[in-house]
Image (cartoon, rainbow, N blue to C red; front, side, top):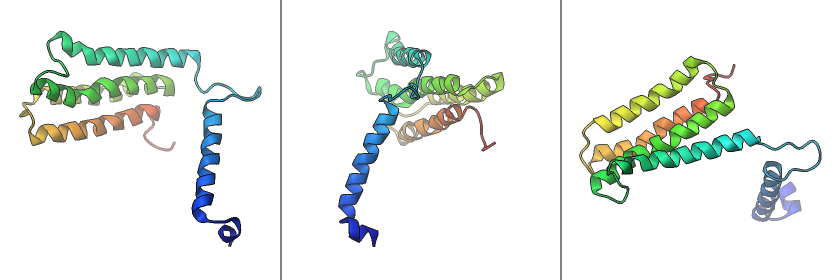
Length: 160
């Protein structure tokens, strides 16, 4: 009955989406009044920029050894398999530092899957353009994303 009184359901949904997105934007970016505090400190921004630069450098390091993104098919296959490792590693480090991974064991749980995945992907002989290589390129980022989620949760695996 409320929808009939207010109007068309699509029009109401559009208006709600517009209002909600404006409010969300204001909460995330625009600071109003004295009670508002920035969502990130200066140190967090510096850390994020530093890790972004480190990720960009990590992507460029293979070029020092002659492996170029725009190179041969085997070079492209290397980047296809490893680009998620180059990027998600630094994202996991950012979340680990920001969300409070303090103990050595927590960092070890974060590092072991990245190291194992990097070793497995780079040591196994994949046929260039083969189905296994395509499967690795699809599933490797998903598996590493789970470790980013672990870092984001601060190493907590349950709702304690």
